[in-house]
Image 1 (cartoon, rainbow over the protein chains, first blue to last red):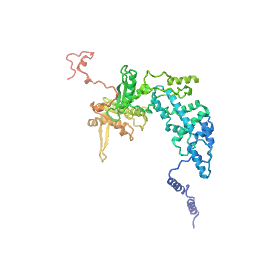
Image 2: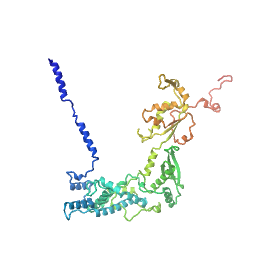
Image 3: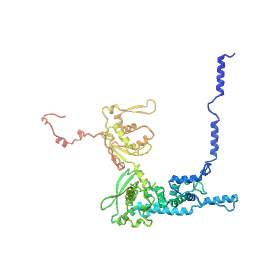
Image 4: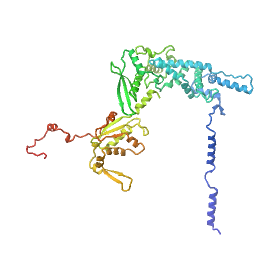
Length: 347
Length: 179
């Protein structure tokens, strides 16, 4: 006969055997299996936001304009977001359903793109010529080419949140489409709030893309040493004399040379360059000299407060490299003065 | 990256070469100073994972100085790994065998032991005398100031200087100074 104590022990063992674990043994294998099945399907395809249930295109368009702080005409904005490919796509959809003559109250943005593109070209060139009066016309053109490239415009367009709002056939939205939509948005802004407002938009969103960049990187200068001596020759200055200012680890693979360019007549340094060989350092010194002459130092601060009426006329052009010299430079206010003018007028 | 940005980075990370004259210097006190240059601690871009250290060339390591009884009391331990393979070498004996060893060990032991220590030590070049190879000398762009001034020894005074030195008394003719 079992004693009371032994019974208790057996009961205890049985009890622990019944509610054994504090966790579910099926959970980990199930998750593992789900993960395996998900992986076997390959990466998830991107889904357009409009396929979600609570998507409201009208309110999104309204919010877009408010987010930018602009007063758009809503019809114009809708037109700016409509691509030709979307209209064709929609018509074909209707035809496939059986509608003989599909009617869509949509106009594509082709006209707006052309208008916006022209406006951006004009403003960008005028702004660059105003703030960089010493930079040769070739440099202005290269900077303009960078600022109005599909790459730059699509970057700006993407980050102000257009891709989800664009009505087009391609998904994910192509870069060219995004760039075109940005142009058409600017054209829509011209028609809604006037050119002044649109010029400020271009200045704030497109021209700021060069704010932290090295300006001469966009302009591939061929033979900078020859170019510098040619320019100085026009001002009756002899070609600069290169001197080795410093070097470290001369006999090693990590050698670094520093070359300074000095004018022969008054022994002033006009450019300083570094590089892994003396030749590269000499070339960089020449580029540095040109940088000083063209008024595009490394730490240049652009006056991002200029408005349309402060920009120079569209017909004005900077000097070409081939005729560039200190004497021929037109008398124009420099960046700093422009900045000061704006500061004092706003006070 | 623009061409200008590339050379700017090259210039920032260029390795300098420093010269240090070890004559009459205590290697144990110099090692913090040498370590600073070897690891690049003196640079504003320093970070433990950034390889920004400089080279240090130490010359005249044979002329180092130890205070007091240190040459006899300081002992360098080595074990061959076999039983009975332990050996203790006094500093003076080690210095006779290899005049660069004491300085190298002083810097090595001062640095914190990690995977970078041996890499950093590769940038330390020690020469027992002032015969540093010409190609090494051409790299040098800076000299590290020694911690202690080098005193002028009695031997280094020339006869002429001794003659000119002001005397307080005149010794008598028959006074014997030395044999």
